[in-house]
Image 1 (tube, rainbow, N blue to C red):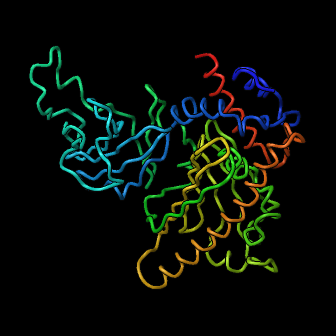
Image 2: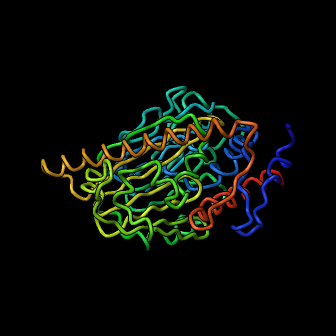
Length: 372
């Protein structure tokens, strides 16, 4: 039955211990009012992956992105400083930069020609003489916070965001340096499910691996698969073992190597999967209450030579197959969430602590929306 946003949010009780807790209600996965609140209070108030460091290495290099429905541009200044701005001209709100990425000496709005330098200062205002009480220095591009983690560049649109290091902690320490990993390829997927379904699936402590990912199950030591939850992040980790007798396992074992698999998550929608010499990042973006986009970037420590190229192709192929397996089950879950037969579920105490952690963090943000 329809109700206010506050009533909807209060259907979830985050105070219960895991063994007594219930999931967020099914309604949270399809309600447009919840989706609108998330856009402002979850995505608009958190660190969001916007670019890669290699795209912004040279002075004047820029990348545009959409963050919580708002246009953003990240640019490397002439002084070498990385800056981020709302990609919105202060005159009539057109995008100042329309290309996805490139190199520029200045940022010029194509609508009326207002021009900004790479530090966001307004420099040119054609035919604007005689406007009373107008000062160029008061009309520069509006900045956002920007920071990085290895090859990843993130921005935050909140007015006074907490430092990125606090969001990530202790993932950089636990996962080690990422600077030696090099971007190779991006894959994008559209899923007929709410973005939270994808995050739930990712955070379930390997609960679905044996059923949904037989190849991956062949290389993970499931008995020693563990999850650790932190303030705004979590880390799933498992020893790796040679695959034996599992369909598809041998091919997975060839490209998922090392002593351990590390699966890091940072609230709300960034996932980092790390093996020896191989990393992929998963970014899930809401498109509608029942649709999302998953962007996967693949990185490798070795990229030169035919053997490295072949390894990367095979690894990306394995990642693609695993993603398609997840697509099927996530879309199936979304259909079930719309059924009258389902409202809330219970958590596996052994496996799903990180899912409950995610639900509690989400509820905390959405409660702020009801108090605004």
